[in-house]
Each structure stands twice: as structure tokens, then as C-alpha cells.
Image 1 (cartoon, rainbow, N blue to C red):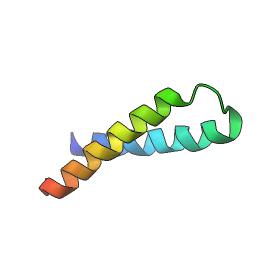
Image 2 (cartoon, rainbow, N blue to C red; image 1 turned 90 degrees about the vertical axis):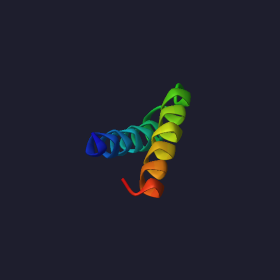
Image 3 (cartoon, one colour; image 1 turned 45 degrees about the vertical axis):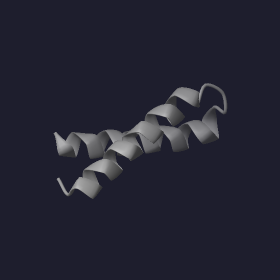
Length: 49
């Protein structure tokens, strides 16, 4: 389950980079999901799990 979290975070970063160059509109959802994923990864790293 932990690896899935990292995979989702990487996919969101790729979509964010792709969206920044292709479509400047509609990126709000990706930004929100990216922030949530980064927070989840950081909490997992801090807990040491």
C-alpha cells in the first residue's frame, strides 16, 4: 500500500508538469491532489513507516 502512495504522487507530478505546458486551464484539481499526495508522503516519511 505504501508503494502505491509513492506511485500516485509521481503520476500526479507528471500530470502537473504535462498540464503546465499543454493546458494552463483546469489545473486546480491536479494542484489540490498533488498537495494532498505530498502531505501524505511526508507524513509517511516522518512516521518512518
